[in-house]
Image (cartoon, rainbow, N blue to C red; front, side, top):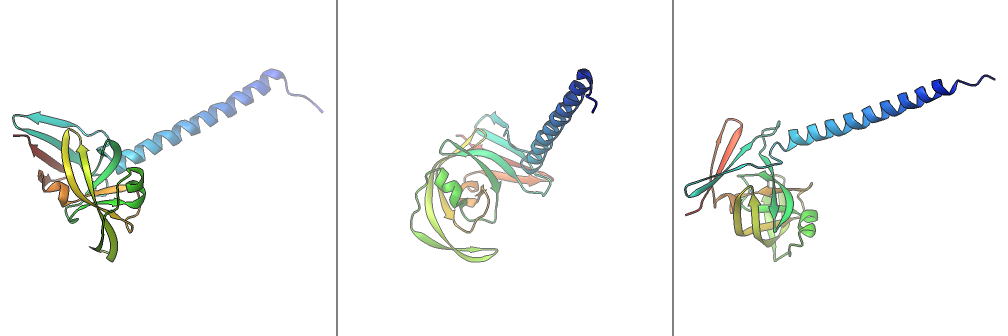
Length: 173
């Protein structure tokens, strides 16, 4: 039985390691690319002017406005939903944020009736826009980990949508 020369064996090992590294890097690149496609507003940019703060959001490839923000100082991903009366939070996210479930309420959703629980958000932040004491719901029927940013938050702002962008404006005076 013939042995391969040590140089040839080392070359094969290096080739295998190079392929493994290339696959690892490609996986990370495409994972980050996919995440940017889902949430093109992972780093929300704010603009401050005389008496206002503005945040400009870009719609994702599905036309939804998804953005990273914070609830009570903890990171969350928001999906803006002008059809939602309140901010709606999945149970798993509410538990992570340590939000207390208040009294039960019946929710009327596109999928029918379901049960939810009232809660309050002390501090909700999107870019430099900060909202305080926001009415919200813990929604057991809400899957995933995105918080629906409904009208209980959005009605404290001016907002306009044009094309694939949405502009949120908070008056500071």
